[in-house]
Amino acid sequence: NAGVMQNPRHLVRRRGQEARLRCSPMKGHSHVYWYRQLPEEGLKFMVYLQKENIIDESGMPKERFSAEFPKEGPSILRIQQVVRGDSAAYFCASSLGTSGARGEQFFGPGTRLTVL
Amino acid sequence: GDSVTQMEGPVTLSEEAFLTINCTYTATGYPSLFWYVQYPGEGLQLLLKATKADDKGSNKGFEATYRKETTSFHLEKGSVQVSDSAVYFCALRRPHSNYQLIWGAGTKLIIKP
Image 1: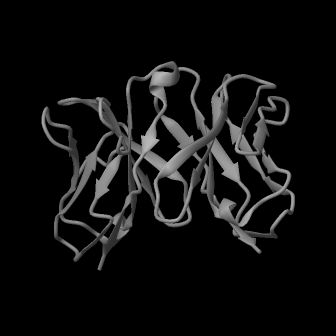
Image 2: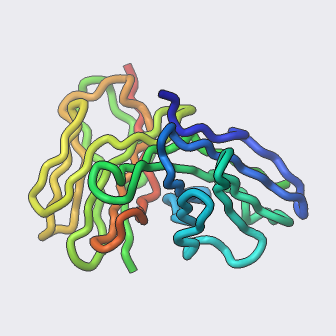
Image 3: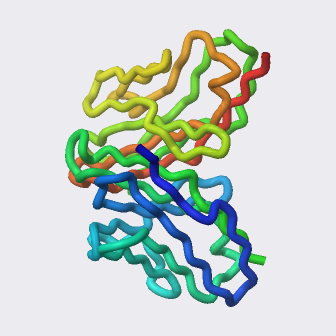
């Protein structure tokens, strides 16, 4: 059973370009979470999605950032018009549910975004 | 607001040494507490957890005890191995949130043969 997959692992963009980060959850998982880790800081919650629905986007910047989790295919975190401050590691996690053992979050290896 | 503070790394030890990585937290109520580990090139893996005061989580020789009086959840291992080299993250989940995790900055552990 493959774990959470993220791609690309490393992404380099110039200021003003768009970045698309992909996350394929574990098989059978319908809950996806995105976290961002700035250099020298802990992970920060960005958004929680459950198939086709955004449940909680309280941690996501209001502008330039968007996330989706379509019925088919991976979850996508999209950053438009990237700036240097967007350089970070972006982690995706998935879970079966949100309570008890079903709420355990399994993490992908992360995508390291560098904005030049 | 809720927060987690970990000791800064890197922590460098010799094989078979005793390990302590400090973690303290600030939160209202009784959060659940977690330690995650990230081996080079891999995703974060849950190492152990504790959901109430005085609980002890343990796994792979690592232990941590939920201390409400000192708001701490220090990670310990009696004898580390080179294969324990990784980044260790302490995290909490708010009492009334089923999913949102609050994270420490991570502590890089380097074990030398």
